[in-house]
Length: 226
Length: 343
Image (tube, rainbow over all chains, first blue to last red; front, side, top):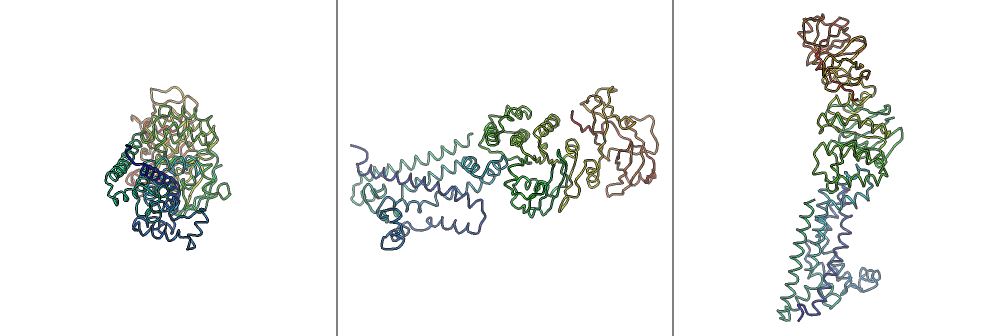
C-alpha cells in the first residue's frame, strides 16, 4: 500500500507546484522592488513597505474573503481579471496562486530588503568603482552577495505557502487536482475521522518543513566557508 | 591636462576648480577639508555633487565613472569574488586583457589570485585595488592615501612602477597622501584645498612652501647626485656650487637629478661656520623672511638660489639677532635630509 493515497499524492504535487510557482514569482518580483526601495530614499517608501507588510497582520480568512469578492464576476475587478486571465479566478489554480502571492509577499520581501539594506550599497559601490554598469552590478555582484538571504527568503516563502490554509480554502475550495492542497486535504481527513491518512499527510508536511530548515542552514554554512 | 570644476553641497560645501598640466597632481589639505569627498565626487560616487565640469564641459556622475578610477582609503572590493575573478571580469568588461599580466607582475599580486578580499592584508588589498583601477585604463586615476598600509620597502618598490605604468597608460593622477614626502616624491604640481575651495594650484615647490607655512614647515631642494661617496650610505649631492651630504641606503647613479626634503625643525642656525662639529652640512645663506608664529620663529633664507626654511625659538632669534637681509649659516645633519627621488 503506498504511503499516500492517490488523491493525497495529487494534493502533494499540486501543493509543491503552488509553492514553487509562488516562490519563483515572489523572489523575481521582490528582488528588484526591494533594491529600488533601498536605493531610492523616496517618500513613497514607507507606504509601499506598509502595503507589503499588510498580509502579515491580516487574518488569512479576511484576505481570502476579500479576494473571493474581488474575483467574483459580478463585480468589476473580477470581470476584468477573468477577461485578463481568460478564466474564472475563484475556485481555480490561478486564483489560489494569486492569493498565495499576496499572502506570502512579506515572507519573501522582508529578508531580501533587510539583506539588501545591509550589504547592497557597499557591494554596489564596489562594482561602481570597478566600472560596471547598474544592471551588471545588480545581477552579478549584489544578488550573489546576498545569497544566504536569498535562499532563506525562497525557503521561507516555499514553506509558508506549503502550509497555507485559510486563504486557499476561501478562494479555492476543495477541488481535487485544481485547488485541493495538502492542508485542505488534511482538514478533510480529520473531518472524516480518517486519522491514518491524516497522520501520514501531517508527517509528510512535517518532513518537508524540517528538510526546508536544514537546507536553509546548510546553505548559510556554505556561504560562510568561502 | 587635469581640468575639473566641482561644486559640492554635502557632506562638505566646497567649490574646487583645478587646472593643471598632465601628470601627477598632489592634493594637499588639512583633515576634514573635503579631499576624500572631492575625489569621490570626481569618481562619480557622490550624488550630492550638484555641478561637475571636466575640461569646461558639464558631465554626469555616470560619465565620469566611466573615465575615472578611484583607489580609496578603504578600497572597495567584492568579498565573494577571488582576486582572479576581479581581474578577469574587469579586463573582460573594459577589454583590457592585454594589461593584466603586466599589472599582476608590476604590482606583485600573482600569489593573491586565489584569495578573496577578506583574506587579504591592508597592503595586499591596496595593491589589488591599484591593479584593478589601472586595468580600467582610466583617463584620470584618483589615489586617496594609497600607500598608508604599505611598509617603506613596498612603497619604494611601488613608486617607480606606478609612475611608469601611469606614464605608459597615459593617465593623469590626483594623489592625496598623508605623508608630505609621498607628494613631494611623486608629484610635480600641487593643489591646496581649504574650507570652501582650492586656494592654490600650481608648481610643487611654491605650493609646498605655502602649505607648509600653515602646517609643519619643510623645504624641498633640488640637486644632482655625485659619485665618490665617502662611505657607504652617504650620498654627496651637488647643490649649486656647494655639496650637500645625504644619508640614504639607496645610492642613485652619478648625474641623477634628485629631490630632497628637509624639515624646518631639523635646521639649526649659526652666525658663522663652525669648526670641530660632526654636522655634515653647513650652508651660508641670506635671510629673506622672519615670521613669528605660535610654535616659534620661521626663518626663510636663500642659498644657491633655493629657499630653505628653519624654525628656531624666539629666544634664539633675539640672541642671534636674526633679521631680513642678514647673513646666517644653516646647520643640519646628513640624516636630516630625505632623498625623495626614485631611481
